[in-house]
Length: 101
Image (cartoon, rainbow, N blue to C red; front, side):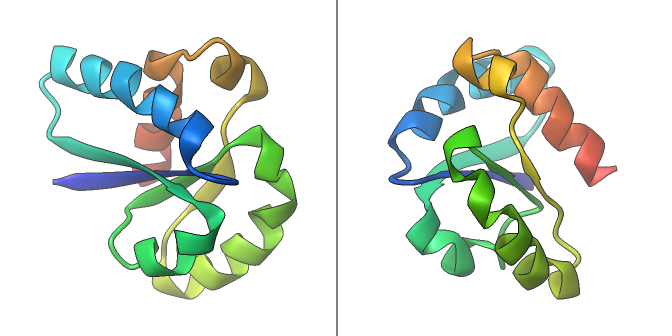
């Protein structure tokens, strides 16, 4: 099973994105775990994640988190602001899947 971690300041706004992403994954018959966490838990979660997507409001953490994740071979990227704002779970899932290869 693949693990996608969404990360924002408190894990609250990204948690709203989890449900539409899970619905889309189920529709596609994909076995994927999707979890939203606050930035403070990034280092605890990176070990278990296949990909980490950051909410636009924590874009300032992208460089630091990428440096932590790179030696582990874990990709980190920003969620597209438009997809995030409109809660487009299908688009965000597509982004995560493309990052996993």
